[in-house]
Image 1 (cartoon, rainbow, N blue to C red):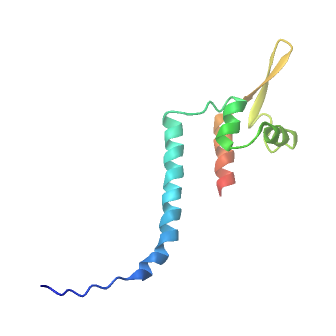
Image 2 (image 1 turned 120 degrees about the vertical axis):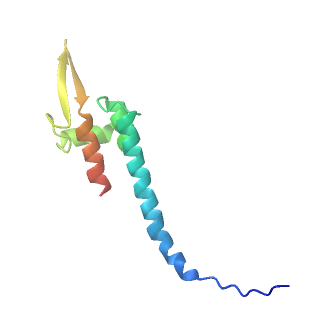
Image 3 (image 1 turned 45 degrees about the vertical axis):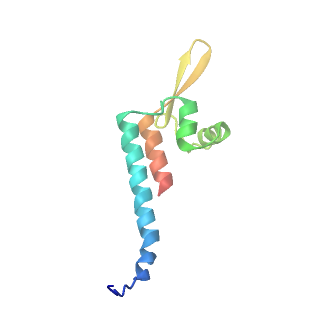
Length: 102
């Protein structure tokens, strides 16, 4: 029989956190590209903005009240009859999410 002496270099294990971070970054980039190609969210609508950002309705209201979401940039108000409808700007919402991920 062949007696082969095999050694294993465990020092490469310290690279795992770096590899994990790179995979996570690539997954985020893939998600963003998929969102641009075939949007899973209609980011002009409040419910989809909430799901896309992973926040609650009350947080959206707070962001608007505290002008974290700026009227005329992140959203517009449209008057329909006696109702004021809020329409979000998808590009501004995507930009906001990217800035929060940094």
